[in-house]
Image (tube, rainbow, N blue to C red):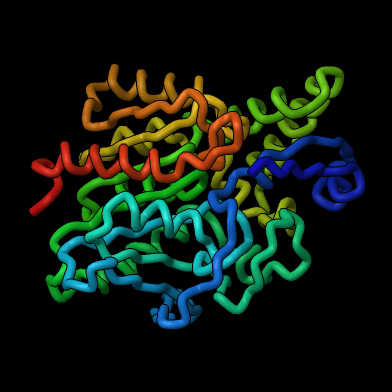
Amino acid sequence: MVNLVKIHNQRMHRVLAKRKKYFTATCVVGCFFFGLTSAVANENDAVSSLRRADGSVIDYYLEVASDNLSSDTLLVSFQGSDCNSVKHNNLIRELSHSAWPSADLLLIEKPGITSDLPRDTNAERPDCPAYYLENDRPEQRVQDANTVVSDMVSDGSYKNVIALGGSEGAVVAALYAAEYDTADAVIMINGGGRWFIDDVNHNIKLTEPESAVASAIEGFNGFAEHILSSNERLDIDVSNHGYAWWRSMLSIDQESVLSRVEIPALIVQGGSDESVSPEAVAELVENLHDLGKFNIELMAYPEMDHGLSDQDGRPMTQDVAESIRGWLINTSDRWRD
């Protein structure tokens, strides 16, 4: 799962040319995604589309429940931050179908991404679509989700909506639950603590040689400061993400977001996660409980990493799915019609 991206002096020269500042940093973005394995998409999974206000297309896929019966529950799942089609993401499909088998599964492509884009786990892939680099950010994904889900539930066939996401997808799921009242329950897996920059620094400390940690943190923090302080949109492509994504991720306060979530919410966090800080997640939940947000629960897996595997590399996907299903059953009186 972990796939660190070095931001070298040469590419930072392009980012910070106006300030003539150079640095080298280690970035967590290459591993801040949710999807370890690829899958051949089901040929029967037809793509559907809606349009954004600017005329661009939102592609999405609806996978009916395994029993093929009419379901009253829609499970919308959000993938993480890599430049790949959600249609080729096997892990999120397996987890989602196992977590609530009787639900229909909704998968929504990111801006500019279609299933024609071949799967590539290289965090610096050269064919990442320009529209994606310019427009992808969590807030846009939330708007797209609202557009699609609102259309899906408009005929009244779905009585319940569950939002689920992993890594960056967890951030998107939380934002969606906070912004719109469509979701009835939300599950966030390995989504990080209050601030993204703290998760990046956590990753640096665990993956860089001890002698390089201080300079790597200084370098990344300098990059983050430049993004946040810029008064103009920067033309950058760092780890297959553009300026809009970087500014958004570095600005989102997950404590503030989750404090606005009123529905049952489950945070699943691996204790061996090197991509986001388990300690920061625990602190986040503690702070939310101090605010009286007891609708938010933490489920910790001490041996689980960011990719839902244990320390021996054994997949824990089914373990997590079963726990999520148990939680959904136990809280069903609070979210099911």
